Length: 374
Image 1 (cartoon, rainbow, N blue to C red):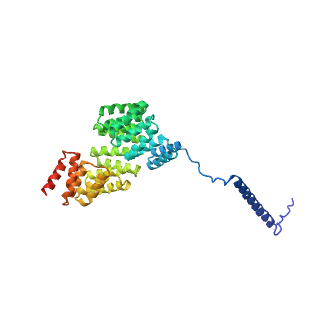
Image 2: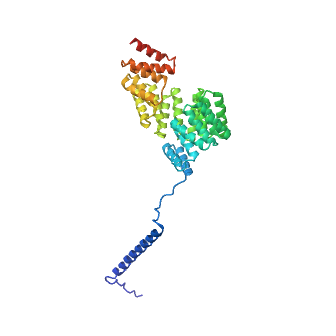
Image 3: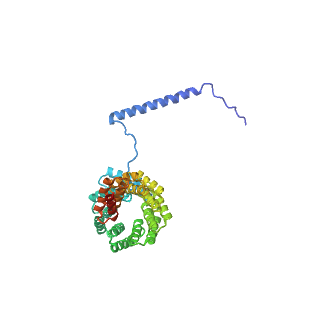
């Protein structure tokens, strides 16, 4: 077979084709621009593509997912955004309130929970979360009332019974607390909030080892509930197992580094071991996270006082009292800090304030006698 040799292209034959392609592209671009200009002239500018906005209820679902993962700041942001888009969405206010409660932002939590109930008073969840917020804010009688409403609205809502048990226990009605938590366990024993509150009932009756078992069981169900590590650490501390207490509070910080309570409690654990420098470091971290966290100022001031650094103790104790930690002991410690720096004229009002809170305060009475002797 005879194969003809390949013909080489003629010199310069490429360029006509290249110019044709370029001209076609320019004409195409001109036609597209011209057509777009006509459309915009008739209909206005074409919309810029934007990401699809999810619905407020979908945002609540995203917030719930973040909460389950221990991403509390992200959960709060989603609940807040849902309420901004739909101010009538009661469930978003309620779940936002629950996270704020667990962060121990009591006043904000109660306000949010009340808003949820105002929007929908027939929701057992809303009433139960209001109960939780009120209880953790020290409004226990009102909390019980809200939880009873929750259990009447939905007798099979386990969280309502669990939160009622906690409120009853905090009010000193231990028998009622046992009955309520037993009902909650019957309804949903696999709920970590239910198991945590079973541990709380055990704790308030002095059954600390049983409480620890229930807290650990709750954490097996969801290891991202930082506040349960606080419960564990507190019970280990009562039992004198300081290493386990420290680990529990450190784990709480790992899960939720924006919660001042964990730093405060870790500092307190160091304090009871007389490890004052470590304790003060943790109290300062609590204040960095929340500059309005009263108890951290109180504990920091108290630690300065114990170390006889009265000049540093005074402003921290003042700040604690200003922020609401207006307690008998902080008042007389502040009094002694003034007295030991030779300022009894400033000390006496604080001893008097302590006696106003507790007329039988022997320490405040000793402070008054000290200043009178001076």
